[in-house]
Image (cartoon, rainbow, N blue to C red; front, top):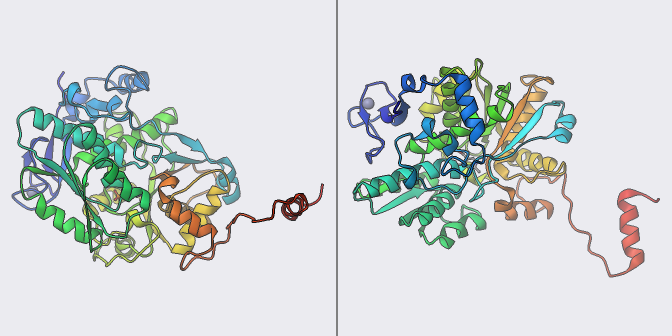
Length: 443
Ligand SMILES: *Cc1c(COP(=O)(O)O)cnc(C)c1O
Ligand SMILES: [Zn+2]
């Protein structure tokens, strides 16, 4: 059986394109495009056979199936030649039982999916491996793609630059100047991308990169391009697989441009269509209160939507005021009985620090998700017996400036309740003993 997928207009007008066409909107109605799979063809294997196949491939050495994304190749991008897959062994990130934090906040079945434990330190690798593989296939087939380009809040550009460099494809990244972390800025520089720091915000970069990609030889790598979602949707499959094919009750996810939550939903729906699962989790989207267009729209029952001017937030990767995938995300939230909640600077920073004290090392976006989790538990939306998975989207080590400033108590609008600054002392036994006793008491 040959499996296949194509691009199709999300507005249901029926217009289709090949996944190898450099188009990002429907020429008839202007709608975004989604990747659609021939699900009938995928039914040639039973649900049990798919589960067995995916389980068997975990960390196999058979190229490219050892990657968490390419282990599900038939569901992701079946038509790509294995020789053109550009993979850095992404996926298979750990999903761990956050036992101590869960006990503190009253949910004993709390899990954290560490998507930042990846090649470039964020979940963006999952989508970029697919997009760059498609570009490599296009170039191999003689299509005149000169470069790939993206606008980014920091993590997309890091992933694009790394995967493009691995495949020897030129990369152009547009970053809002001064609005990404030092680690995020240096990643594409190190990977030899053309790094353009623009005097604007993410939404401004996004407008310009769309103009640049009007040139058909420059391929757009933002999540407006639905190929990214094909890789990102494997997180849903991986989570269920990690629970022996059981579906959790809740997933809490920090959101900005709204591609990742749409991808998450897509993964669950495909599993349900093919009979691997028979229920869906509820989804909670977590936004920064400083960049909250989805939250505001949710307050109106999604009847109204207005882009906002995103304000400066510690959760810089989700500092987005006009999310590209708004329509996709609303569809997902309606299907998954979803909720949207927001977190202030104070809430997100303290939530991250509180979790760090139980052994985690959270990026500010994971802090947003945790702060929202705390609220949903307090409100009784999430119950003590629910199994909850928090999506941690990036590695805390990419946000050292944030952590240092928190523990120095120098973050604006944050009262650092869990600050743990180093105790500076003379090299003196008595002074050290005094400090130990001050913290832990006398023996
Ligand atoms: C990209 C990103 C997000 C948001 O994902 P969207 O698809 O834009 O909603 C959240 N956290 C981190 C760390 C990211 O890099
Ligand atoms: Zn259309």
